[in-house]
Amino acid sequence: MSALRLTSIFYLLPLLGFWLVLIYNLGAQWSVYEQYSYGWAVPILCLYLLWRNAEMPKSGNAESKKQKAESPTPSSLPAFQRFNVSAFQIVGLFLLCLLYAPTRFFHEANPIWRFTSLLWTLEVIGLTLLLLQATHPASPTANHASRLTFPICFFLVAVPWPSGIETFVIQSLMRLNSATTVELLGLFGVPALQHGNVIEVGSGMVGIDEACSGIRSLQATLMISLFLGEMYALSAWRRTFCVFAGFALAFAFNIGRTFLLARVAAAKGVGAVASWHDPAGVTILVTCFLSLWLVARALRAVESGKQKVEEGGPGSVVSGQWSEVGGPVVRSPVVPLSAVSWSLLAWLLVVESGTELWYQSHERATAANLQWSVQHPAQNPSYEEVEIPSNIRGQFLADESTHARWKDGSGNSWQLYYFRWLPAHSLEKRVAIQLAKTHGPEKCLPAAGMTLRAYRGIITVPVAGIQLALQQYVFSAEGTTLHVFYAIYEDPSGTTELANRRKDFPSRVAAALSGSRNYGQRFLEVALIGCERPEDARAALRSELDKIIKVER
Image (tube, rainbow, N blue to C red; front, side):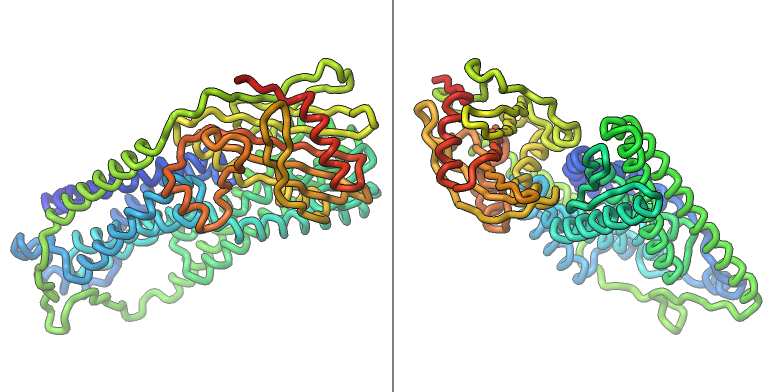
């Protein structure tokens, strides 16, 4: 490796700090979101593509090689002209660094905010491309830097999609999946009905959520499609075809998986689905990727055959940034790259330390004079604690959790979910706490086939000497009225104030400005069947909460 190349790599080292911090923060989302667990493989694939494209031999005919041999190269230029940053690059680097600080600051309080995740990634990619351009001055091999653009931008496939787009795509495909599966079951003589994302068979209900990882493999399929297109150097339209083929394969294999699980549930009972779920998912995912690899291989074979037919024609010489007279286009040096690299490293340290100091200065001990939890009412023999479904437990990742069902003296049916998170001391724990804030009855119950009839606003219920603020919803499920009372409380604000759920831009900004990062929280959701009037439901709720809420002063 030449000394010039070693010097250019040394100047790029400060970027490693930006990438490590970014990967560390996105990694928490890759660990929590099942559909993005493939993100851990993306940095490795990026490094492979960088190495592969950097070592790729330059194409060109003998005449172009002769011209390159006779022309001056960047290494023959004076040292002060080799690595200097132009005015355009300086402006770009300054703007990206300026934008990096607020992005990092707001993301710390909102570790699952898709907007800051994408913006942060684009900023680091932009810094990388600008510095990479500076370490490869204008020369006949200027296309060397351009070959590294795709491997760097490929990292974008590991960034979670914007929530609105992801929710629309996922929900639309899940409903289409359930509708298609119901039709296929009918063709095979298995009676089935669709209820939103739930399929009803003779033995019970099969939720599409049990097979949702197949639907969500669309993101992983997109990643594999783009990677194979670059690895096999496919043309633009063949890469596009490969992406759409990946989507079609993912959807088709997922329908096969859902059909299999529904058939198992119809034949052996809903309980048998659990033993088939993971093996079917792994088998179908591997088969989908192998099929996509075969498609990419076939496209590569077709393209290679076409290139062989066209061989023999006049070769084209890529002029890059060389002038028509044969000399290099020399940029006016502005700032040495070494100074820019050290400045980037210093800025990274300033932003990271400043962000940490801000949030540490706002974190305070939780008030210890009042603690409350859920207890077993000894006077109600029908009260029973039920095992929390694995998919819910995996999404919430709480320190304490309770799922209970019971009937009151009037015959009303009750169901309760209670989760408790202690103050977080790790990024992954903060992600879990913030993820819990995104779950609510207004979002989750309609996905299960229920209809929201009314939102009754925020009510206050006196319980055991404290005040509980709760949101009241009224749902309809197959003609039955369901009252749902729901709240999330952060420890510092107690039970009289609902937590900031970070549902919009102003609330996320407010969370950052208030230094809300590591607070513990509680989640309470109570559902009631048996009352028609909301007023009666509230009165029944107060009576039941007095029996199950335990307050310690």
